Image (cartoon, rainbow, N blue to C red; front, side):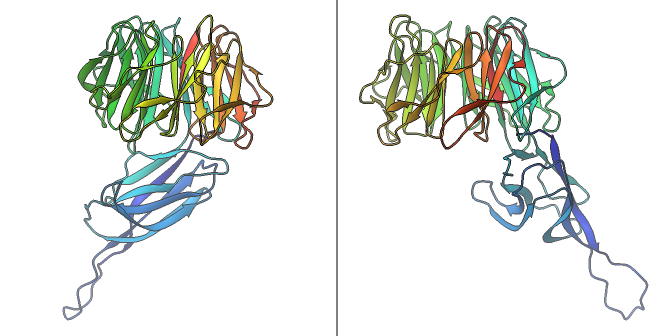
Length: 442
């Protein structure tokens, strides 16, 4: 989603009229200065980027003066402000670029006199290297999905494993769970370059062996495999610092965690063979835990309707499927679940497809939107690399990446949204550190 790391710089409130001049004492006073919001675009690859001026909250605000930005160059939004304006208006991206898709964020959206607003269009990808205690960073080509290394790997805690990244309207953050130092490293992301800077106070204490993370609102949830619990933190939206830790017991050895519309689900891999379910305050859902297949290792959601687990049991590997009750959060096994299907590590979904690692391969299935049943896709398995580990799909749903734990690299594929087919992208596999495990991309 970013072959070129572009930026849209909105030069806020350019003066379009000004008072002044002589005139005799009987002349009416000159009109007060007025300003428009304008700027320049550079490095944009996709088309369809739309900017608007808005008031009120980002959820319920009122927006006006839409401008579609389709090429690099200067632009002006159709709105005029008086001199000295310092009100609540802000610039908002109401449509992201497409053809090819890109993801843009605004660093400082407030409309102010003689200030500027920068909209950055770029995608970055980060990989945890467990044996090196580092994080590899890449830029992503918006057209091909190819990865380009950004600078040298970034130091983390001991044995970095899980990783989670997200962007808010102001900035981006990356969080890394460090298995051996039992903490979470937090970084702010430079939205133009992808460079990472440690958040104030990082790293933050976690439970023993943090294995997985999920986000709900401004809360970060961490599954701690060694202490059999889940930690919840509040994310400071300005710095990325984590505060206000609370914990709740899970099952044995929790290794995966997801959020589905306010319900938190945790895969318990250590012998209890079940899934714990919580409300966002970590109060257990009625009926929790719910039985799963043998050794459930990872979770994947299909919308808010179905939940799947990868169960790499040594004797009977399988994928379990559940329907989610939206009113209560309870899980009900799908007909035929657990499905006796090959799986070795992790699972993910996008569109109507489910993908799972199996040995050195990726296997794909279509998902029945009514029943949740899985049907093998033609053309699979697809070769990845030695000990194919985790799977990540980029925010535009056009690229799929696999960490190859035994090959110290990342395989990249283009994803056909119509068929679910995967095609290796040019330049794949891309180099990583030793024992690459998880990926964050945004």
